[in-house]
Every structure is written in C-alpha cells, then in structure tokens.
Image (cartoon, rainbow, N blue to C red; front, top):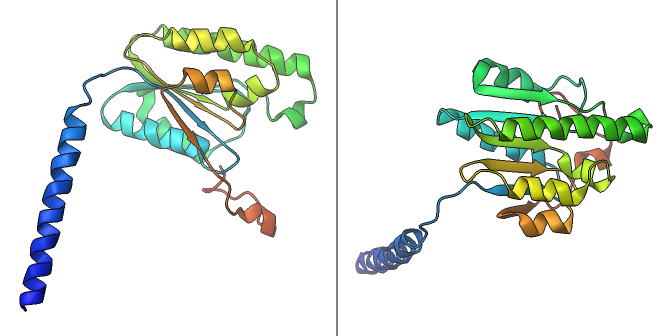
Length: 203
C-alpha cells in the first residue's frame, strides 16, 4: 500500500511539474494571426485534414470558402455533408478532373486561372475567415499558375484570414512562406493490395 501511495505521489508531482511547464509555454504565445497552412506529402489525408479544420471553423460560426483546383464534377461526401451549412460556406469546384483525364494542358491552365481568380475574390470577402485551396499544389506542380504570383498573393492575405493549401509536392517557395506545414507520410496504402477507391473513404 505504501508503494502505491509513493508511486501516486511521484506521479502527481511529475504531472504538476509538467503542467507548470505547459502553462508557461502556452502563456508565452501572444501572437494571433491568419495562418498559411500547407498539407502535403505522398500519404493519404491532406484534403481530409483540411476539411476537418473547416468543420471546426464552422462549429465556431465562421464563414468559410473552398476552391477545388483539380477535382471536377466528382460528387463527394464532404460536399454533401457541408451543404447543410448553406450560406456559411462558399464552395467552388473549378477543376475539370485529374490531369490524366483532361489530357489538355491549355484547358487545365485556363481552369486553374479561373480558380485562382475565384480565390482572390474570396480573399477580398471580409466575411470569410478560412479558405481551403484544395489541390492547389497540383496546379503549381504542373506550372498551370505562376508560382511567384500565387505565393505573393497568399502572403498578402489580410491579417485575420487563414488559408489551407493541399496536394502533393508542395513547392519549396510555398513551404517557406507558410506558417504551418504538415507532410503526410505514406506508410501503407490499401490501393497496393488491390482495394479500390470507396465511398465514404476516398470520396
């Protein structure tokens, strides 16, 4: 019994010390600003994480925007679910499908240009506090948009606007400009075992 009492006391002292350090760390963070967030890497979950963050923002009553650069008329579960928020979301699917489907670079460049024009429009709307730029990294990877202009535009966002960029192969210049970068690492993927894209998981 004494050993258990001693162990409990040591644990309590350890957690008190941990709490003091944690509280001091939190208290030292005083800057509040709109973040440029990049979700990249070969692993699954980049857009999923962005839409999860969007759901959090919606729960706080924020108005949010989405511009999808590559996906076309593909019906997705997140779009259906988020439709319930009505005017709280400005959702724009601007792509015409994956690059290997369109097989027309001029068409892809035109679609990406229209999409980025929509991004600038949403950025100017002061009622919107968070914008997801879904698969913008793909458009940048294939040079559908001028990288320097895109990065400069995102850096010039108003101070309270959060922007999330998704897609593999984020450009180093975008990573450098970002406040938060997460790389999804592929450890294991069911596609390799012949499992097809499934409703509710991939779309």
